[in-house]
Each structure stands twice: as structure tokens, then as C-alpha cells.
Length: 286
Ligand code: NAP
Image 1 (spheres, rainbow, N blue to C red):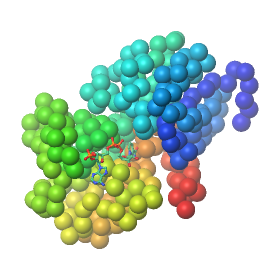
Image 2 (image 1 turned 180 degrees about the vertical axis):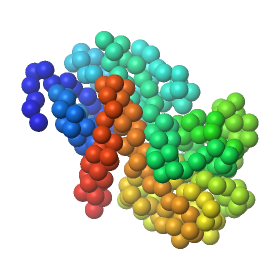
Image 3 (image 1 turned 90 degrees about the vertical axis):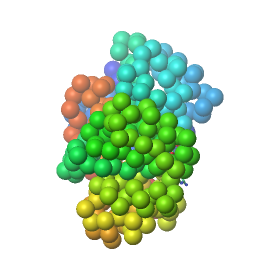
Image 4 (image 1 turned 135 degrees about the horizontal axis):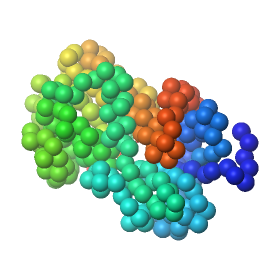
């Protein structure tokens, strides 16, 4: 890769940031397409966020991703926010359009693209979503118009209920409940799709799992947004129950693909980005 004074800069900001797979994935796409651009990761502490965004403006950074813990707080420093990101309440992608910073959220559309690639049909299906945080909100808004019913189960019940009311206009059958053994048992018995959008099971706490395989069935699809490890304990439980198991790495790649398209208007090489992310993950999780 040649870097010159013409090279365009893209970035990701978060705290922590050293485990991010985005630099590997985005740089491989720039290289494959022979674009004179680089993508770097910056650790930005919460108290430095405003200064970091001002710095992006003065340096002319053309686009950046935002990850934990800045997805909500970054919104107040942007010039415009896309209506879907406003609904979700979080931004993961910013594009610099001639000095105007516009925020988007590609997590929900990334999840839908990943499910499509796995031939998972949501239309006419009953879906149970675990969690009501940032990822769950992005997923809920994307899935609600498609799925027949959507049950949101969350540790903090009020957040599940709030999210269910926010998506009610897209899905009249949406309901929010407390995540418990009893609600899991009753709601999973006739569910077609189970989605975990909590960090439970994520490296290094890989032994944790919110749902035992005995509550799953073989006609079910189980999608875990956690991508490290690629096969979580939840997905192993799903396989044991004979269910179809889908990991979160594809969603990560597709949300990055959508960011790339917002920045450049060019379709990036999805397979190459996936392989780069997968290889980088193998190197990080041991
Ligand atoms: P978040 O905003 O902090 O939300 C976390 C959610 O998980 C909350 O609903 C929280 O419940 C619940 N939760 C946390 N610990 C729990 C536990 N021990 N038991 C039960 N529920 C628990 O986080 P987020 O941004 O949504 O991220 C969630 C996960 O998604 C992370 O692992 C992240 O890496 C992953 N993610 C993946 C992708 C991808 O592309 N694959 C994209 C975005 C995020 P309370 O409301 O009760 O606190």
C-alpha cells in the first residue's frame, strides 16, 4: 500500500478499540479496489469525544465508524442524522459531505443482509429478541416491519416495554417482557427465530449463555449478534437442539459494507472483507 499526501483518511473511534476488526476489513476493501484511502482506529475517551469530532472536521476525515461507548453521544456533534438512526437513537457511521457531517446506523440493515445471506426468512415468522440496548434497537426497527410478531425480552423490563412501544407502529403484535426462565419457556415454544442481541457469551466470558438448548426446537433459527467467538455457547446449544445457528460475524461485515457504500458509493468485495475479518478474529481470540 502506498500512502501519499493525497491519501484519504477513514477511521473508527471507540473505547476500547484495540479489538476492532473494522480496520482490517475496510483496508482490505480499499486495497482490493485500488483506492488511495486508509482506515485507522482511534481510542477516544468519552471526555475527549467533542474534541475528536472537531479534529475529524479540521483534518478532513471523509468518514468514520463509531463504536461503544460513543454511538449515542456522538449524535449531538453531527450536522444531520438520518431518520432511521434517529429512530434507533444511535449512530455507527458518519460521512463527511463537503464539511457536513451526516450520521447513519447500518447495524439493523447489516443484520438483515446477514440473515438474507443465510436464507433466513422473517416474513410470517414469530421472532424473540433478547436485549433492548443499542444493537437490539437497531435490529428491532429493521425486523419489526417484516416479522409476524416480535417479543422483546430484556433483563430490565422497562427497556423491553419502551422498545416494544417504539416499534408498535411497524408491528402491532410487538411486546416487551422481563427476560426470565418462565418468559423464555412460554415465548420460545412457538417461536421461529431467536436473536441474542446482548453481550452474553462474548469473549472472554465464553461459557455464559442466556438460553438452554432444552428450550429450543429444530424448526428454529438462532441468530447471535456476538461474533467473538464465532461459535458462541448459544449457537452450540442451538445446534444440539437441531436448530439452524447463525453467528454475528456476517452482520459485522455487512454493517461495514454498508458504511463503505455510504462513504464511497462503491460496492466493496464482501467475501474478501469477510475472510479478512475471520482471519483477524482467529488471531485475536486466543
Ligand atoms: P448495550 O447497548 O450495552 O446493551 C446491552 C444489552 O444486553 C442490554 O439490553 C442489557 O440489558 C443486556 N445485557 C447485558 N448483560 C446482560 C446479562 N448478563 N444478562 C442479560 N442481559 C444482559 O450493548 P449493544 O451495543 O447493544 O451490544 C450488545 C452486543 O452486540 C455486544 O456483544 C456487541 O459486540 C454486539 N454487536 C454486534 C454487532 C455485529 O455487527 N455483529 C453490532 C453491534 C453490536 P439491561 O438493559 O438490563 O442492561
